[in-house]
Image (cartoon, one colour):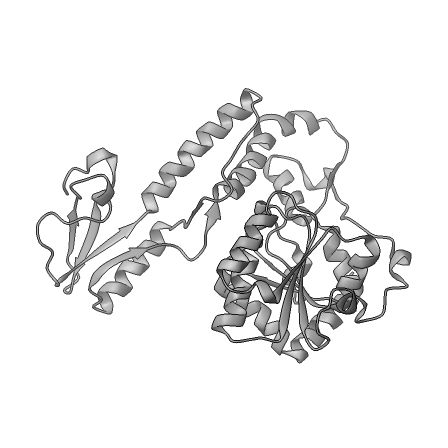
Length: 352
């Protein structure tokens, strides 16, 4: 195996007989994807960021540890993503490529993606628990966890089950006894009565992965040719509104997308009553919005990019992968399947 310049791993080639070979690029750019000499059509060059991702994680981990120890404010990019690839995934990819006799130059990656921001959030939680939280709470008689996931995190840092109490968020049901009648929101915002509302409720911040929702919606109405819906993005601007509008315009879906801005409590209830589904691409903790959607009988779609709630994965709502294709398919599944929606609503009514 040749020495890799700049510390980069060599690219791996597989011929049609399954033989392996390695090449190193002659410049930094081609360090992953370059040939020395003329490539033969008998060989395939496969580039993967498997080891690079590990190096990146190591670097950001060191930076986070040092910053937290020094009490520094953390500033992390929110618009930079990677697709982690496990070694076992890469091996399966190479095997399939060899078996199918695929030739050419391919880039392989895992099916999921993660941003620097979300990776830093999860890592910071673990580091804070390891470095500080365990010292603070070790003498507490009881520790309150918001969700089962939080309880497991507490157990992971050494807190016994006997000292953990799970107390989820709650709402006062009396506040929801007199919900608005249907179609009030549609009339107020001139949404055609026959259109199905896909609703997002929350701050318009890049970390909420609204971009993912907008791209999924573009797939729904352009690629999947589903034109019976309107995407309503409701919530105050937190630095992402102008970018979201620009993205919608560049994708050609501005006329099918409504930005309402901040909604009063009354208007929020109107939106929930008229919504066909609530889509929250990413969340942490236990959003009150989820409980309000349950009271209104609105199915929820989210992804596994952020936190998880056990009851959402037990036939009550849909949890999908954080990519526009899977999210669009999940939205279409609910919008076009009345029986599935009925089952989810029934499950909501019986979920404790």
